[in-house]
Length: 314
Image 1 (cartoon, rainbow, N blue to C red):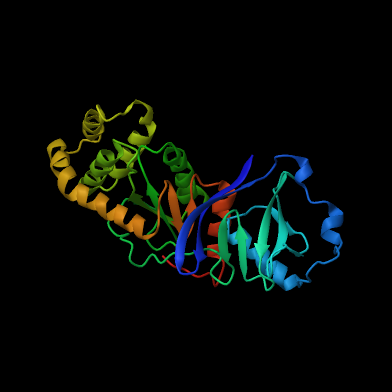
Image 2 (cartoon, rainbow, N blue to C red):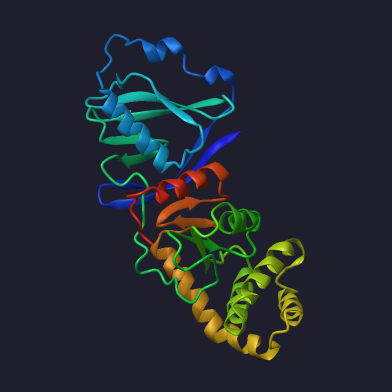
């Protein structure tokens, strides 16, 4: 069972490198840390303080969105066989008692770490929060009050099956679980591998210009009918939903290659500036959550941002 699949942005010198880390939980009970390992200090271990370990665990939980009742335990820090490089085993246990592990390499001060081919700068914001100030969020499809303390920006693709699955989840978050506290802003990010997604995005944007509520009607239609829509019949499907919602068909068609195309291009440009390269990708007050959102992970991020004093970067 994959407990955590998160695309993270890591700092290596001055370069940003996009990597994927996957922590597997529940492969086998044998992955549980031997109790004596976590209690005893083996010969050659490097002493660490509880404060250092607490800071490291907090960073890992935030960076990889490990919420709920999941727990992280660390083995003692040992020399890794290379000068000034040390190793610790990280054990992640979920609320079902299933445990997985990953090896973490660190410097002695625990300010830099390497995990699954990536370098973590432990002195940076563990949330990897992005600057959303230059992202165009006004005049877009949205749900929830404009003054909500949490803004969730979603980059999605109408042909993406994971976006379709996420749609119901994010609606529940905004309209039920965190009603009045969250606002969703939809940004089009049709991927090049999806041949009809760009037309669907253009049509949905043009529908929104006629009637803001119509955008969500288009979104639901495209997601619900993904399996039957293809490049050869996408125009027919656009006509079908346009007529169903009683919109001006000729205006939609004229708009798609002008205003609709421009809006989709702008959304893609915004996504590229934020290093989006897959859908769905969410930014919760600027904190990236990549892929189909795990209920507990999303709740962990939202709850943390609702706490007094949490940094709000919309």
